[in-house]
Amino acid sequence: MTASPDLGTPAATSSGTVPTSNPAPAPVPPPAPPAVTAPFDSTAFRAVFRRHAAGVAVITAAGARPAGFTATSLTSVSADPPLLSFGISSTGSAWPTIADAAHVGVHILGEHQEDVAATFARSGADRFAPPTAWGPGPYGVPLLEDVHVWLVARVLARIPAGDHRIVVAQAVAGAPGGDADRPLLYHHGRYNALRH
Image 1 (cartoon, rainbow, N blue to C red):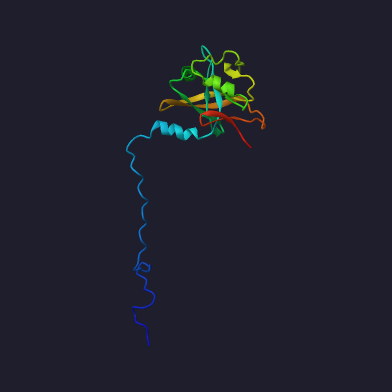
Image 2 (cartoon, one colour):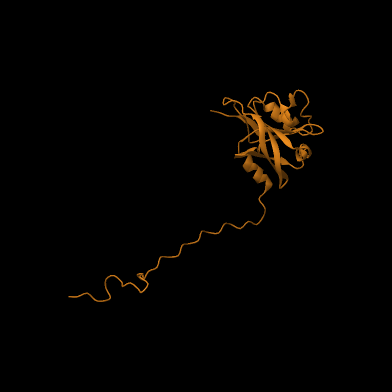
């Protein structure tokens, strides 16, 4: 008994390919994201970031009077060249001085410096009055005493971002501190320390 000519392996076409009778199904596209009907609520946005633990820094700059503020937005941007960034409110009292400064001081606070963080976060306070201990550093930047980790950085850019400005700066001097230093953290509206 011989096989029927329409059985077996299909013959190749003139292009050398073998036709198939059952092509693969087309991929199913992912579901569309839900439609956004209104801007995300700023209160809910703040609630999200209250759960994000962040290191605490004080940024300072020289001007007609020294200015400074507490920041939890300090970020390492690049190691080569050594770039950093931080956000500052464009309505904050320190902004006019930061807006004109060629250099800024960056102080990363230790867990024992909650009072320093609170002083530089307090609206209307003379942040450089006693008991704040400070002196002029490189490029005339006000540097806080008893801060083991600090940088002086040259401002490269001030980028508008909503009600803030993102400042990008290049480190030009500093003291890296020791590995044993325990940082001050900010989480859920209060200062905290690392727990091991």
